Image (cartoon, rainbow, N blue to C red; front, side, top):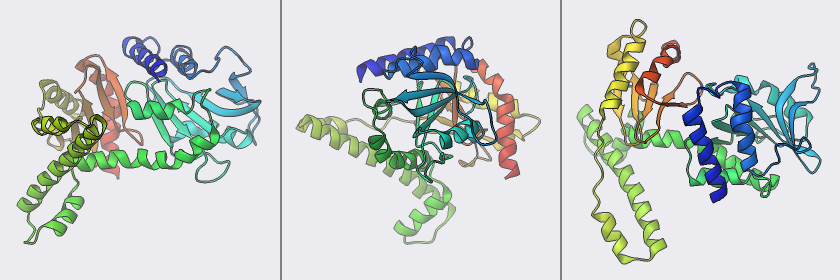
Length: 348
């Protein structure tokens, strides 16, 4: 795993340091995508294994190409479609993969912009590509669990049966995680009302709901801490570990100057199209949210500034697109995308 992890880390550094010069689709292919598959053990220079510009006639379409097809044992196993680095991947980019999937033996398809890799299969209906990925891997933002899942696609480990056995679970885990994350950091009003009804005997009021909402966030944090503590104790079999954990108080959420400035930049970029009073800031432990109408279901941007590499999460597509920035001035490039996001919510 360390070899794969090191290779992915090198690609993440390449994107962070040279993103501007490798932003086009062709540059992404040669500088990121091919090295990505090379890190998985594929011979990217062998056209019998990694086929570039793969062509297979489909009904009503002649001569269309998908960027790469990976062939194993004489059969096409994975189709790959590449987009430019700054492309927000969404369903409209699946059209070619969708058609090719029906006329080849491929069981998996990958849509990528070089940084984000969305893995698809046919869980819903045989030989018809699902519209939702069952696994998404972000080169610039991943954890050990994601690396474990990615390793299953390595040439040496590749097993259609093993991957499909976990694919449906991964699909729903991926869909549920951001919902639960939002519940943990900013419990929606409907959820808080449900909790109030289950734990509070008196009459519900705004003050009560605010109190229960705060208690709910604290309860989520304690559950996570207790799970981590339990695993540490089991792994270490050290009775002092729990005492050390209990001495650690929960770190306070501090809204940094950069997060405040990021919020003001979003306000400024939306001026003239959205009333500035509607653009709210709500800090959480893992990111600082900029919301429309202070509604956590209407995120305009998420400021992931709690790490050395800053990211801004944008929501003009179907899911969050985390874009790396070198400094806050880079946010000025997001004006059109932020406007599109605000308009999307106002039209809903």
